Length: 209
Image (tube, rainbow, N blue to C red):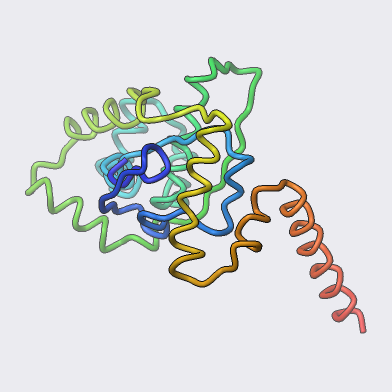
């Protein structure tokens, strides 16, 4: 949300590390994207703190009745994983999904990558981090997740986002216009997927030699 490039061509800086700022990745299949869902790095920072401190874990177990075994696994979620989970919750609410539906997302990283960031977040509270703070942050960033800062993409929205990539990849990085434009067609991505599978087969054949 602090750098809403895909949402409305915005700019800025954010702390969800590993997600590029102010450009459309070349490997993003834009024309097959149905939603843009923005998540604040304040949410990922603060939920990371709850998931990885004794104060936070005790709050989840004792006040929110989370299973201790589940809570013990929350450090498996890093900033990007938390962002993916929050985006999934927002999408589920927007689409009026229920317990008969499922959204599949990816836990791309673990909290062990962000120990220095965790210490920064704790320091921001200047020794005032306690159960009450956990309750406020949990309510704001998890149970209170809303459908703000998201967009269901029309065909024109997809073209707009696709065209943003031209300035990075053609003008700045030297990708040919022909190679850039190919990515509009789903056949390109299907072919790319088949090529990746062929590499897997070649690796298996090599290992069996």
